[in-house]
Image (cartoon, rainbow, N blue to C red; front, side, top):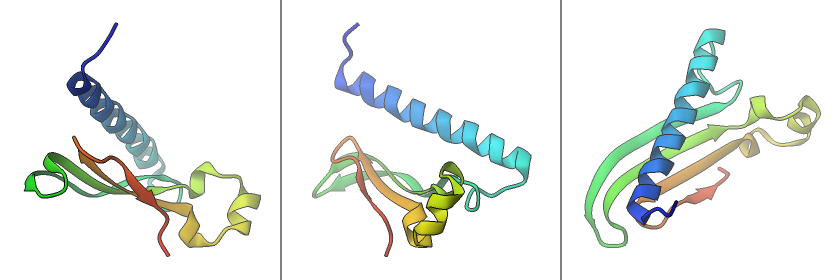
Length: 102
């Protein structure tokens, strides 16, 4: 079934939000904030309008904590800064702009 780009964007937003909520619920059951085990931390999640580069839409800036998703021997080999993945996303527009801190 073909989708329009607007329908795809809505589905993508829903999928990411649902997965983040599910991971957050699992971490809450463990009493974890998400930074130690792994999960998604939203720093910004807001609408924007009349941006020169991206137009208007929805902006999110999040940190994805990967430590709990990797085996211990890999965590031991990598610096702590590489266990966080930062993502900036402008929807619609250029999405995503990702990278590791440091």
